[in-house]
Image (cartoon, rainbow, N blue to C red):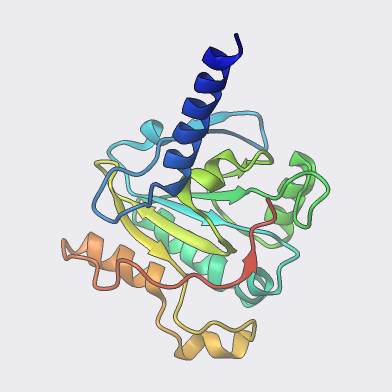
Length: 201
């Protein structure tokens, strides 16, 4: 009499396993998402159809994140993106009790104190958005084009250290990708290796 339930359970496990193993591919539709920002506003991928979107996974306690915020590199790229009409969303997928998990008020304090300028900071304590995108590190960067296709995924730059002195000689992958897109050119490095701290799911 338990056989039907057992069969349903197996089917559910298969569906979960299939979705978890589905790899993101550049040039294909980016995963849809829904998440609330620090003000309680809901954001969805479909809200930004017609605009280029940058997703930045972040954790303020991560030394690799501190490298880019402490030097002003991340903020400069956020400002440049905004000037190009690009939407920039920061995402925090740290689970409650884990490093980097913050309250909405604390997230806003960090944005203000660092003079950061994303359009919004999405709080993703369940990790649903992070898992959908396969975000592994902080920072981990993604660019979605106006049609909703994934155009770039990987590191913010080419030198995988926490040393801010390395930034000037690194290839800034996200900055370069946005410039190429603005010029109507294909992204020359659409997939790169992300580096940083592990996302604290």
